[in-house]
Image (cartoon, rainbow, N blue to C red):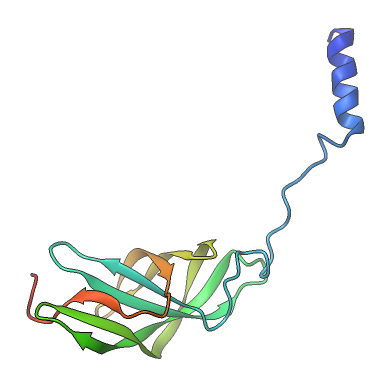
Length: 137
């Protein structure tokens, strides 16, 4: 190693360049996901479906959450559209990964013992659009 490279390395070492580590993620640094937060997945081909989840528990690391599915109620309808809001939690808990304050991802229960993988966005409190019953495929 040349003397210039050695001096540069020693300078960086003194300034702590090689000791820096990313901050450890905790439940409070996961972007603000907390127990009781509601998230939704919007999906479908030629129709739009909404799946809703509620956060039941945040892991100590803040990287995952335990969620439960939620029923939905129709807030109001159009000719081919329903606008739905969350109603109540049901079923067993399942784990999702926290991607950001507004995003969860993972596999969740779907349709009589099956599962599906989805991305969930934070619910804003507004009714969500989905294709009305009897339309789409």
